[in-house]
Length: 486
Image (cartoon, rainbow, N blue to C red; front, side, top):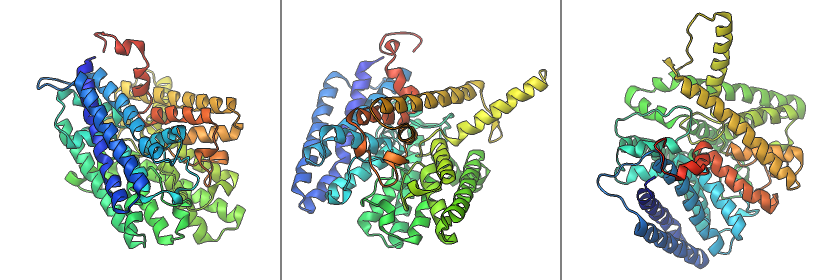
């Protein structure tokens, strides 16, 4: 691995992190939030100082290319470094202790949206903006956004894109990697602007509209009120949010193609159609369950079902009602949608619908092969044959997610958390949802977790955002040694 290249690009990333802190710093200065302004000024200085130190040991040359090991190191270490720098405003401003600042930063950049702050309404607007920005920057991907606005890295840049984008397949819509990143970023910005305008028309203030638009499109879920969406009691806002959360759960690559070939691309996409079918069935079941078991009025039950199925399946985690009080069947369906997540290539977390489709088709293929051993069958998605490596990759990822869910739940039970609560928090964290059931329910926060569990949660959020194997590769001893296999 070329450490000079890694160090040089990490230096650019930390400078980018410092630049992202300028808007909250300006807001703090204008609003005379002196503690916040001082905290952001210190944070920007630390980012610049870190950039200079990294550039002392590295830098890019004209003929440099990023290989697979460099791509993994830049993505993994870049996320880790920026998440650590991102905690400084919380800690330096005196709003949180060091551990809670770390959790809040990791949760923000990973798009988990789980908070350790029990009363966000006492925070200055600059810190609220920084929380939302951390969601937004982390939603599409720190490195993807960085690639979209910075010069080309060389032909090896595809390894960086592969290391950060989510899903079993990595489709490219344009020949050049930077053009691909720019197209994804353009769609991301456009959807954020449209979302902010829609929220403003629903009655939100400009500040609330911008913050909630960033966290909706990023499927992060940070809010500016303790009750998040429930604080507004706005029917139109809930339906509007549900729409944009579902949109954000679709593949952004699919939207890029739709801009070139027409909107029909979206409705012909197997994964997105399957995702819509899943949330429709889940919403119908939850609505009927609320009407029968809780005697909820039909409109209220339907609205609550649509909103929370959209919120949890997209892994946004917005809360309009206390779904922790729902009947067991509704909770089971919400937990299922939480685990599945959105589409590959979206900002949503979870297992991804594409992997579920591949796994079901893979099982069906094995059954057909048992019945007709001489017939050659292939797993197909969107009319295209999928390589065996991709199918086996989906199976390996599913196994890794289940094992890590069990491991994190075991860690929390060891730390004194009840079995059901541990399972809920584990699934919620690994799926990047935020709220769950029990100790970390719709109206609760990560503040109730013991310190050791909070620290471990940071690691599991890091694992889930980079889809596990990118991070695990960093812990392989052979990764750091010179080897032709890399």
